[in-house]
Image 1 (cartoon, rainbow, N blue to C red):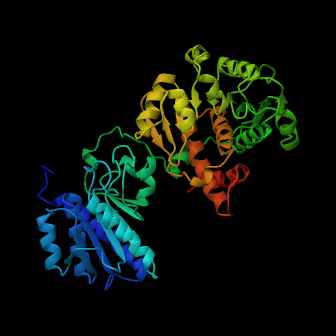
Image 2: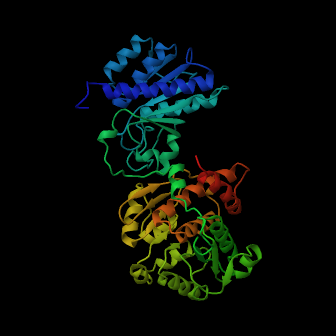
Image 3: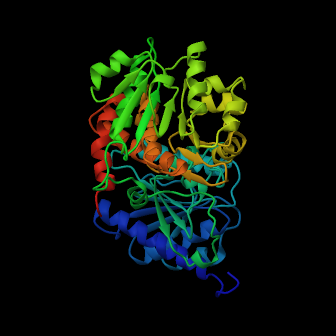
Length: 470
């Protein structure tokens, strides 16, 4: 800001916001003229962005109303809005086409204050009471009321259909409950890139990244060179966990899958190409192990986990393997490992491992556990976080609530193990597996309620789509 004329960044932000709202109104109604736009205006620059965009929309023929939710608002923006034909209102109008949320921006703390919460509630009630299409809500930079740095939602907050953010993505748009409040996120370049740190707080993979990471089969490869993955999963009581994990592994890039466990009969019946043994020690050589899903927590399971941890290859630990780590008796085996380790807890498993829930800052919590365990942590959730012992964090943008069903984690672990066995670095294997797994969940959900088998069956087509040339 010190190098630019006053107000330059706000005008750039408002121009980007206006463009997105014009596009939305054109798609929904065929144009801007005569459409009803409501601005929810707070005291900061966020409100100024909304006011300048509102003035631009009014000049294009929109009917723009502004509801002030603070004693003081951006004076220049307010004057420009009124000069362009906008008007002040003291309540949410009965009919609205688009709402611009300019209540608070990145400086906001906690949930919405009472007056703002009441206005947001009134917008929702207007939508329910109307027999027309409900108004679209566009958040300015971030949805008001969310915790911008952590993604937590600690009170009333705006639920946006679209968030137009400026300069750089914010954590709240990517992780935690706030990411759901953000809706579709559009990034507007306002000239900040040269001033941004070269070490981002979060890395967010796109399809091109995953496609570049994904192992490819070469003309000289055979089934061994492609990688051999072993699965020490399932039990007589939970054979399905083994079946699901193997299904995930077979969809991955490796050429050979070995299974070690008491669900061998179920594996042989379903997957004739998988070579089965009763125990890890009898399975033969592998390039990576997956251990834990449905394994149980008895003495046999403990011995199998100990054997897996002793193997000088990358390991993915899931479900019961994590439960067996909680009492600390295997901590030495974990510390002595020189090969990469990936742990894949959901929130309850994380709490048992870390001694506390992930809390409001899921990224920081995952990073702390990764450093303590010297392992890559894949913290499952609607926006899965992958944290490394070295302090890097990734977030998966393809998450879906459809995956919140029994057995999908088993599929994910098998796929992740296959990527590890193919030679992919642990954090990239975790991130690529989460990315593809999320898309497979979305694909499976298109046909109706999702089961873990549906996700496993959707993996091949999903991987083909992600990795095909652009």
